[in-house]
Amino acid sequence: MRIKHFTSVTALWILLLLPFQMKPQASGNIAIGSSGIYNLKNYGVGHGMRLILYPQFRLNIVGEFSYFLPLFVTKIPLVNSFPLTYKVHEYYAGVSVNYKIHMNHRINQYLIGNAAFNYWPNFRSSSKSNAKKHGTSFEAGYGIAGNRCFRPFIEARYNIIKLEPNVRFGFAWIFNCVYFEGYGGDARKRYKCPSCF
Image (cartoon, rainbow, N blue to C red; front, side, top):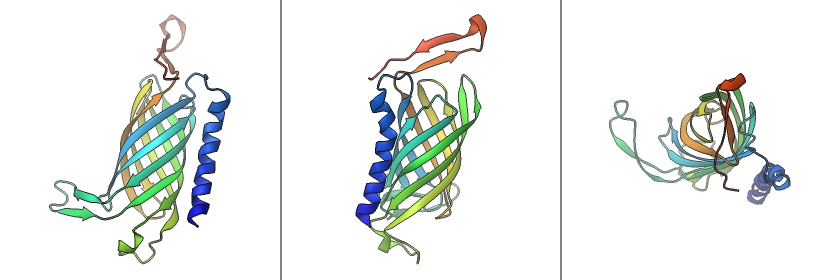
């Protein structure tokens, strides 16, 4: 079962990377990102990485990998008044579809749909009767991001399977990025950001 999940995730990433092996110099077609993650239900802290296809289009495909490691964390101030030890050790690998519902030269607002494979090495430490070592995860959410080459973002998501909300704060960088300021006529200015390719 573990090999089957690993093979499926690997195949998804190969499909995501394939367009850029064919057109490595395409302008603004790929972005990479990093984020911090906070689970509002079990107070877990994690880290996420992402590969974004066609970040300047309305519809984006995003490959994502995230993990939560056991550590000492503190509950939200003014809501909970004592610390706890977070024991969950989890990994997620999957794909999101982001659809921009509002776009301008400063920010983007978008809806998120995510499907991922879940690997939970220490699932036996959970008090949940339905805890499993391997599983699937589906999330829906909403995000706001900048609209330049360097794009900070914040996302609110909800795990439909585990009934867990989480928030993500991070940034993305677009390679070979070109963006426009203003709209139409002489007011429209074109800017090219430095490339890492």
